[in-house]
Amino acid sequence: MDWWVSIPKVELHAHLNGSIRGSTLLELARGLGEKGTIVFSDVEHAILKDDRSLQEVFKLFDLIHIVTTDHKILTRITQEVVEDFAAENVVYLELRTTPKRNDLIGMSKRSYMEAVVKGLRAVATVEVDLAPRDLGTGNPVNSCAITDLCDGTARKKIYVRLLLSIDRRETTASAMETVELALEMRDLGVAGIDLSGNPIVGEWATFLPALKFAREQGLSITLHCGEVPNPVEINAMLDFLPGRIGHACFFGEEEWRKLKSCKIPVEICLTSNIRTETISSVDVHHFVDLYNAEHPTVLCTDDSGVFSTSLSGEYILASSAFGRSYAFYEYEYRLLNGLGRSEMFRLARKAIEFIFADDAVKRELGEIFESAARKLD
Ligand code: 5GP
Image (tube, rainbow, N blue to C red):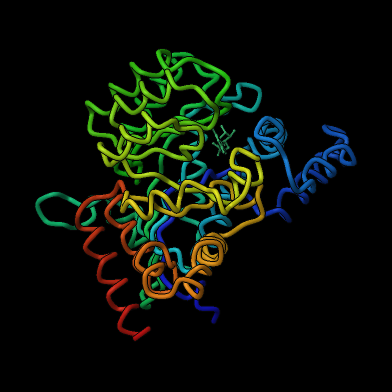
């Protein structure tokens, strides 16, 4: 098996609807075309287009949501997305999605999330651990979630935790509803809240009350931060001290200083940033500076379906972009930023520190990486 696929990996920034298989999206869109709900030929072009600006990506999401916002389809794509990540040895996945309401089909935010959880339970190729641990015993609090899935044989396992996303188009009340739902679903593996959606829409002040409430109640928080130049918002987000941030593309000197002094981990999405042209090329990506500064970072896919990538692909991209200088500068450069296989393995393992699950899961993941390291020696 390809080395990059074979190493265990941790995925912390994956949007459910952005991770949909291309083949599934085309199949579902064709089906709606046959029903006359959409014009398939218009949609096919939009789906197959390779490079899109960030704003075009959000138009594509509106289209994807027309196709996927249905209970059965959500269950299907959740199952497929988890199976796809597990197939490339992602051992811990934080999957985020925006709970949606659609009165026309009797969908509430809760029934949306129940369809997602049903998809986790339908995963067949791998055992899914989606239950948080009891603080006293270390055992899963919702053991049926696991035993239901376990067929009695020792199977490969993936830990999945859910993050509920607040879309920047939402009101304070709607954001609060999502947080309440997250709290009710904690025993089903909901570990935190994400703020995402079109970064030129909405105001930080709208979401702050819900995010503060979520944190007071013990939920972890990650924010899409700095996808567009907006220093006022970036500073407000950093002052909030979220558990992690995603992207960090448009930071000025002051914001970098603040980020580094707070040591907020950054979810790095190389392909997504390049495809959406928020970063002009991988060679100038801020990942390398953060890596050299030993700032906590984790490589992620963002939207593996929309950007035709995979987590193994992101590791290969980082290593080929930032590891090749090793040959020219030899020893000294290697110490700075030569990202060879052992450095990449360490980077993958380091991500355990930034997950939103409890210490028992961190310990178990540590053992998985330890065992993989022994096999690689
Ligand atoms: P969903 O939440 O519907 O499962 O996943 C798609 C949604 O995630 C999009 O509608 C958007 O709100 C959010 N999303 C996906 N990729 C990005 C991204 O690169 N930046 C931001 N800000 N939001 C994103």
